[in-house]
Amino acid sequence: MKRGIYFFFTTFLLSSCGLFSSEDDKPNDKPYSLEYPSFYPIPEIPSDNPLTEKGVELGRKLFNDPILSYNNTISCASCHQEQFNFSDDKIKSIGVDGKQTDVHSMTLTNVLYYKQLFWNGRVNSLEQQATLPIEHPNEMNQPIEQLIEKLKAKEEYVELFEIAFGENSINKTNISKALAQFQRTLISKGIARFDTFLSNRNPAIFSKEEFEGYRIFFSEKGDCFHCHGGELGTNFKFENNGLFSDISNKGLGAITGNKDSLGMFQVPSLRNISRSAPYMHDGRFSTLEEVIEHYNSGLKDSPTLHPKLKIKYDEGGMQLNPTEIQQLIAFLKTMDDPIQ
Amino acid sequence: MRFKFIFTMIFIFSVFSACKKEKKEYLYTVKLMPTYGGNPIELNVYNYVTTQNDTFKITNLEMYVSDFKINGKALIESKENYLAHTAAQSNATSVDFKLEEAIPESYTFEWYHGFSPQQNVPNGIINNSFNNAMQWPDVLGGGYHFMKFEGRFLENGIEKAFAIHLGKNGNQVVFSKEISNNVAFIEFELDSLLKSKHSIDLKSLPGSIMENDSIQTLFKENVQKSVRIL
Image 1 (cartoon, rainbow over the protein chains, first blue to last red):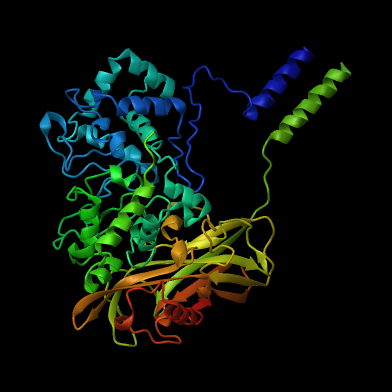
Image 2 (spheres, rainbow over the protein chains, first blue to last red):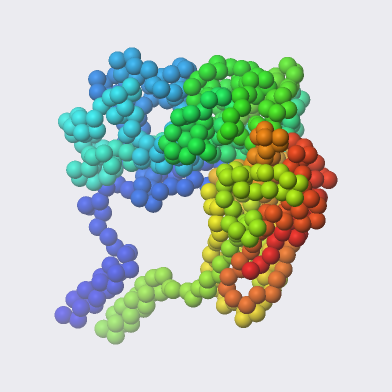
């Protein structure tokens, strides 16, 4: 009798401290080990969607599966291809039935660091973002309810969702969570030559041409660093970089309704930039030379033009000569991870 | 039987010990409020006129205060001993610190506008996305921007831009003040920044301020007279 009391009492105490818990009725929530270079910013992972091995695995499968489109022809990976820095090489991407997207496909590399998603920042989390292309008529054009039914009809997905999120868990929330989890793992590898520089802050890693480009980039001559500085080559903000004189109903301002953010678009990371062409939200530039020439001589003034660019505009542009342009491009390419 | 009882009690005691203990914490708050003419800043409105008769608006204002010390001792020994004011916050910004020791009834509060030389190095503060974007390039001395103060002004009715970016160790200013509560409320007077010692003419500011040591020094001297604790 006393032995029974001891056992009951001890078990009760252990349970109250959370040392015992039944795993049988829970999904496999083994945490996913997110790896990123030590000198990168610390990622913020939402507490209601921690990365798990099974969640990421499911997200990866969904990301690559054309089942997400109404006619099973387009997956996320169709427009976000690893070889193109998780973007694609088209000015506007091609969705279902040959329809064109409104803007150039954004790179997803390091997307976990962004607090607002899409070129115009219309959502505030990857969970919100994940299902929008599925339902967009020009992209995958599939109602989520229809996708849910298709997934439920596939035994493999029923099992994967059950393992990742528990029984009967195929729903919009968990589709979003899985896709968001996978996208958060798309981090540049930290093995670019620029990373070697960041790890020891010794510019001797650069060739003479790259070093001159580095000095242009990080000085007020080029003044690239105010928008594309830091370890990831972005300030994580929305800026007007002088693409339009008429900014009415464009960019972030069209979402916020605030005229002071009209013409502003997401500042993309420059990681793997040479594999991200074409450039800008509308894919208007096909080469890095064209991009730099824009800042050199093609800036357009408007009320929200970034103040540093406005100063450059009033001074006549960046005014780099052809040699300096090539030096700058040589430096930009040091931000590319080597192809493995 | 007695052995079993003792064993069980030791086991129970060790389980309780493993449970988290509550520690006594003391809250300390640092607030920072940029003002113009004593009022909170309003962004994107042509509300302001300098002593040089430049009518201007502020489009972006970001800054740091840091290295907080009470009676010469760091508030916390970590890379988080700072407060960032971001453009989205046009009123006061604040940060709470949980301290293990009670605050003295009266004490000297000390802080930097910007960063101390020890913190003003790459990764001197925690590396989040905001701090990442505030880095001051190694080419220009390294560390962080202490302040980004950007906007537009009118010159003969034509809109021009200004971008006052301050940083470098030479721009550091340390302040101290006797206070007697657990809130340090720092006011930064932007109007004083433009006139307190040197009257700033936005029209004559060069486009490249970060590399211009004399302008950095000029602003440093103005910063010294632009900060007060409420």
